[in-house]
Image (cartoon, rainbow, N blue to C red):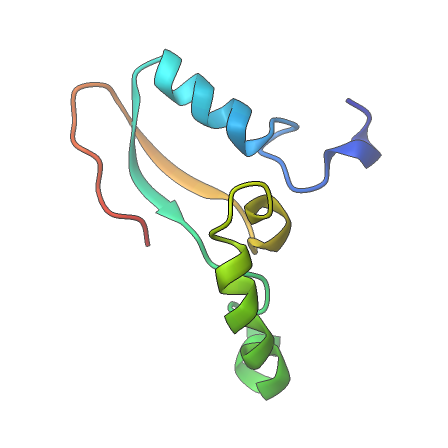
Length: 89
């Protein structure tokens, strides 16, 4: 994949590919942050319009296929096998 093709990926890996790798190698999700664009940062706290825009982005970020485009960043905390999953942030 060329650098300009990657967009919102985890080190050049799509979210679906990353989740498949986690399952195949027995990694458990401790935390998966799902903050939409416009919900984090100085501009979000200072510009009311951005905070309002983040609301529809929150919905879009929960739809498979759209989530990679509307998440602020894709953040996971993982633990190697045998532990229970914790609720997403």
